[in-house]
Image (cartoon, rainbow, N blue to C red; front, side, top):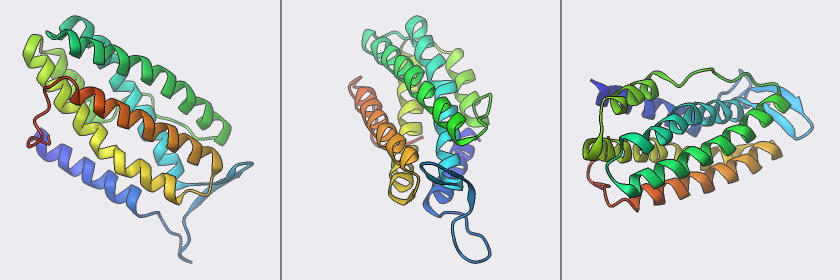
Length: 186
């Protein structure tokens, strides 16, 4: 059931981020104007999704410090947690500048992953930690590129560049654990 939910959520996010919302005359829906350019639906979605990622990846990265069996997974968790503190600080700052409200908790899938990981330790935690985080990062990787390529807001474009770099770094770190099963995607 969780796998079906993950696929559906990832697919919906991919579709939303691949295709901008349009109003009746066919242009992207503009939520507001700012000194950096119009703020559109995709811009808001990026800020929301990055904040939600930080809301679950930071605590799970910290959790790895006590639940992981591998020293490398502990190290990767520490780095991810620290990166998400900084990423979220920037996200919150940009959202405030653009007048965008952000959620206060991770989405349902992310909450499920947190619950799943809270019940694990040692090698089982390590494998599941790498699997869930790599899946989440892989799903957002192309979506960030879409926002980066399509936004007309210079502040969002700069933030998307930064998010791209962080996601790529995190994917490489997760892969460095030696626990990635490239055939298993969920």
